[in-house]
Image 1 (tube, rainbow, N blue to C red):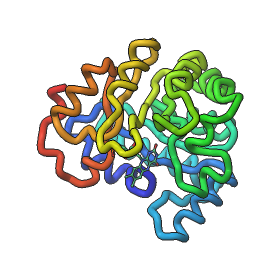
Image 2: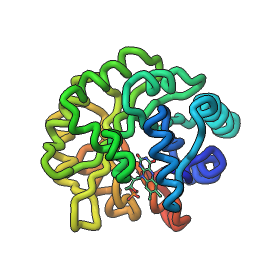
Image 3: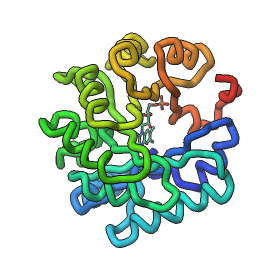
Image 4: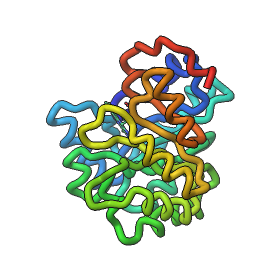
Length: 236
Ligand SMILES: Cc1cc2nc3c(=O)[nH]c(=O)nc-3n(C[C@H](O)[C@H](O)[C@H](O)COP(=O)(O)O)c2cc1C
């Protein structure tokens, strides 16, 4: 979560039972860094690092988590307009997963064709496969489901063919304050990729529904920030 998920925050919440901790999102090239600055200017939290510091910053953050939680996989959620900076991030020492952010919908990020706009690119599969083919770590692609005019299952298939290791789906659906479990099931039934189900995993019933949909894992954002996790996630 931009401006929130740093090593200090993650080291505090990992003991709830998480086996993957995601740093970021981070902006990795000039267009995304400038967009981040504009987001900060209008008062929203963002990680705002210059280009000559961002990669060493992430490396230090990964080390700060691994020092305390050796067995947790560390992922970095990153935004860039081309694959190259993401490939560079994927080579960061001890980073287990580089996560391509095809999810952000902040207007400054959309305006430069990044975040969820990446899902509209004709060369999406090629963009992702360039990252997959040039990094040693695992690759996750974080998407937003049910974007108007896009077929989420079709996108999931492209991400699978590109060779990504994980499809991290924010299964949001307009007007519904819960995950779109039917869509998640459709993706799980029609692909072999490891699906991480996200959105509203804030109680045991919702997590059970997500698991029944066939996911490999689930992720949480707002319920972790709120500090109100009143159940044991290790049981799932
Ligand atoms: C303050 C905030 C910042 C976020 N920043 C990011 C981000 O940088 N990258 C990303 O992929 N998702 C980001 N998200 C989305 C969450 O990771 C998650 O997909 C979404 O909130 C739905 O899951 P939840 O119901 O568990 O919160 C952010 C969410 C919030 C509330």
